[in-house]
Image (tube, rainbow, N blue to C red; front, side, top):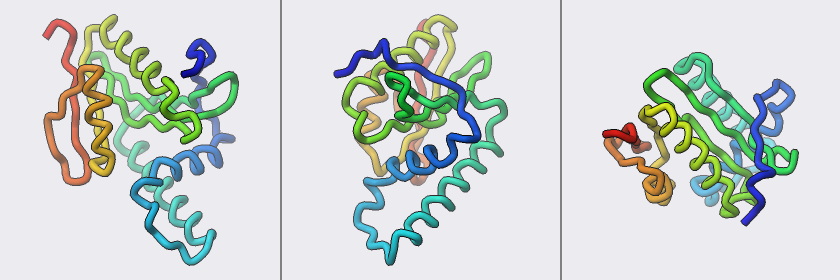
Length: 163
């Protein structure tokens, strides 16, 4: 485990683009592990296309995203993308670099989100890829329940603390 007091967030900058593309690629490792790329350029082109498609999706479907870089001891280690309304906090995406996973960082982020939900007494929602079924159990620890199966994803919700 790590010292979570060294965990901070900062707003995403344009200069973060290369980091974010590389980070995105790490989030696809499980599903892409058996692909035999002809060369490194093909792999890079594929992930750049996928990253740009995801960015376009986020930009087209959410206004005023809170798009932050996760830092540990001032080192960029991930991203946290949230969409807030008065009634709901939607967890759009959380990615942490592989070498920082399973060290309590995701748990700390989720506990901070949980605290905000309780203070504001609002619901929270998220989608997760069905290729990562273990995420259902992880999010379940924070009160999220699967409510809909949507093709490649599952949709989860955490009700207000008084419901």
